[in-house]
Amino acid sequence: MLRLLKIELFKLKHSRSVKVISSIYFILITFIALIASIEFNFGNIHFRVADQGIFNFPFIWHFNTYVAAILKLFLAIVIVSLMSNEYTYRTLKQNLIDGLSKKEFVLSKFLTVLLFASISTIFIFIVTLTLGLSFSDYNEIGIIFSDLEYIAAYFIKLVAFFSFCLFLGVLVKRSAFALGFLIVWQVIEWLLYGLMKWQFFRDTEIADKVALFFPLNAMANLIKEPFSRLGVIQTAANQLGENFTKDYAVGWLNILIVVVWTFLFVYWSYAVLKRRDL
Amino acid sequence: MENILTINNLTKKFGSLTAVNNLSFTIEKGNVYGILGPNGSGKSTTLGIVLNVVNKTSGDFQWFNGDISTHDALKKVGAIIERPNFYPYMTAVQNLKLVCKIKEVSEAKILEKLELVGLSERKDSKFSTFSLGMKQRLAIASALLNDPEILILDEPTNGLDPQGIHQIREIIKKIASLGTTILLASHLLDEVEKVCTHVVILRKGVSLYSGGVDAMNASHGFLTLQSNNMELLERALKGNSAFGTVKRDGEYLIVYLNQPMDATEVNKLLFEKGVTLSHLVKRKESLEEQFLELTKQN
Image 1 (cartoon, one colour):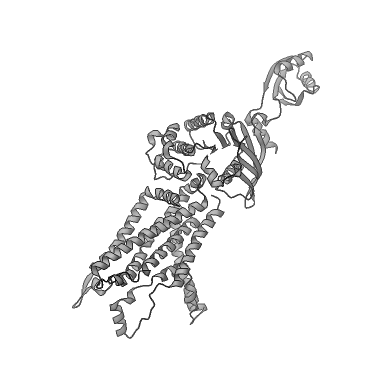
Image 2: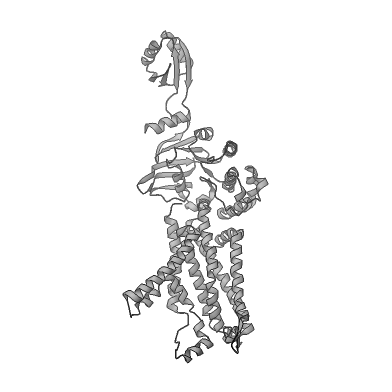
């Protein structure tokens, strides 16, 4: 295992583009902290984002993981290209000839996915903790470390997403096409949902139930949008007579669906590679 | 003899095309093998299969008597196929270090092997800055890192300039002289003729011949003859069972020998029959002639 990871890290270590994109990614995550400094005047009201409670524990775990997860697209580029480059440089073939098995090859890529997801998770944990300790109104240990499920969900979400990217890289062979396919797939999920919701199963819950199993939708559902949970929004909604009764927790069924997809993506990567003549 | 690679009834189909058809041969330790065949005869496909990058359709193959899995066996093999594949953004040394990690061998030999192929001066240059000849030499260095039991070379001089071809050949000869088993696939016959002790000849995925270079043609050579009296010469030849096919080639007669016989003997025999020769040459077919003969007939 360690050998495979070392091989993969050696490939990454010397690639400038990998270093640049990864650095941008981690710098952008730290920029979440900048949200704190957003302030503006709305009529007579002085509005400062940091005062709206978004940096309060435990809500901050939810908020930060949600925002940081959007940035995963940057690392997706790294993952896709680290796979498709093996095709374009024809080094995949050379690696196999040098004595790596196809299983080991896929495993080494998956280990890299796990490593990237772990580093990103640890990173977001530290950033969030620091931000929270600086701005949160509640600083009791018990409150600080509640709702850590979002950190776990963040990790699972990243692993699943990167595995999907890995699979696309294996399948499509070209990074640009693989990333394009990712976008096309998102559109397909929306279209399918739309068709079911407004065409085939009108006025039923079937469309929503089925959509739970779509890979990208399932990943998105792991960490639901946190904005409607904010005090200001809730108050505003109440005044308009609306009432949010949304469940923001990380669902077990959701985790299971995403983990199954992750497994399938990695397995399919192996299966595709195994069948293919290189 | 210790077997390095055994191939049994190997077949590979790409859709309706049969690239390799029921191929069997064995590679023994210490010999230098050539796989000959025109372009598209299945040489690369065969090598691709035993090197784990192409899936076989049927049949099987065994590395080192089948004691270990293919990918572990490949760690003891050095192979270069078609063109050199390395990470362009890494230097020569970095690329070789990576190969060491994959093959699980020590990095101690990197400089020695770079020296062998004459790349020591460029060891810290990026692979992308190399010329094709240098890339090919780096590939050879890479294949030798583990002091392989067998070195597999697929068209190693393809696309190189005469100087590059010469360098690669010198390296191959040097390696062969060290006693390393070599399997060389090529359509360049003189390349094979110069270094190989055994050949496998392929055409359209079928093996036409497999065995020693010497035993490749069972004939005992042929004679090119000329005389003042060609009719008499032809009659004399046809009346003797020592001679086989006789054919005319311009002003000469070409006759194949049915039994070993040297030129003096032939001369004497014909003189006794009243034929005086004005031209007598005895020759064995070159590999090229034998190869063309074999690939044409079938």
